Figure 1 (tube, one colour):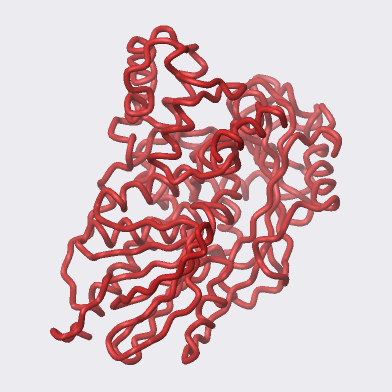
Figure 2 (tube, one colour; figure 1 turned 60 degrees about the horizontal axis):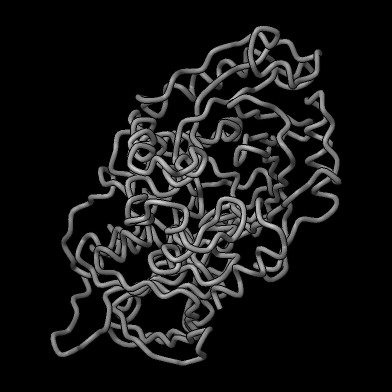
Length: 501
């Protein structure tokens, strides 16, 4: 073990580079074990990959076909833990998988779902079963050629909010969270690192020292390692763009569809923000600098074409009201195409000169907590630090209630604020859980909510997000802390921007 020399003075035990789900998860776990932590994110929390997912906490049913049994098992185990930890932003969802007669046989799907039900130690969620679509609520939206389907369970997640809540908990446990702060250089010394920081807002520069570096910069993991001139990592990432579209509501029931495609990929059709349907995703390998990608016409058409193989109601590119794209930094396992690259992760620990740097390759949002636990285990051993694992049984901020009591919490919130519209009560409870009282404070009327920015957005919520959740821009609020951008006009967005500035 590399003990810190008594005469050395360091600012932090860990500097974590990257404010996506893995970075904030690691910072939270480490701070909870008594390590001093600084997390730096060059943009906003969850600005890139972690806000561009299909927003599911799931085992990955299709990964069974790739024989990723351990990945599916671990993901399904985490699904249960995360549902307990954050039942306000994570909730159960039932999925409908229509049987396409020209693709996988029914017996194979049934076998896969049997495994899916049993290999992860499912406790809370109901098991899968077959359905006849002419007698099921999900059948009316589908073409008449689809007569049978399978129904199974997974969970939905407000992905960017999951990132923010981990950052909030990390800060509450002593971590320092710096957004819009770029690490411009890291220099390895004997037993410690020096990290050079640039505040992207004020353009001020600073320097900190740390016993260890965690490189959780996602698509930039190799670029971050390049800051260390002596690094010799033998691992790599493949950058795969995933895009989604949002269209007006295509069906009026709570089920999510999972559609098989002839190219062995799948797309989801998810009820979204009450008035919309979310469709995606794509798998397009990219080679350019991450962070600059957006959906292209071919991806939009691909999603529409595949949805139109199933739905009665056709969807076209003209129906798209919003789209988003993100780059997944998948661990390069030399698979022949992007859709077959493993969604599992690789942890690389370099301990030269007694100054460890641990780099995270790949991963998926469902397994972030377990990944974080493994990272901190490795670093505690290397740094000679003791500290018990703890995150498997800890709630995230606002999630300190039983998942089965969510409707009771909504009712309690409505009774406390009877003047609030029921849709806003539902929205606040879903996003903030038991923290809704901190958001609303002593408000007892809409006048006390302050300025109305449009749709369901009021000044009370904006001020809370700025003060408590590192929000600085209209985009932070409208597309990451919430999805209220779907309901505001361009003029209202500009009004919000003017207020924030």
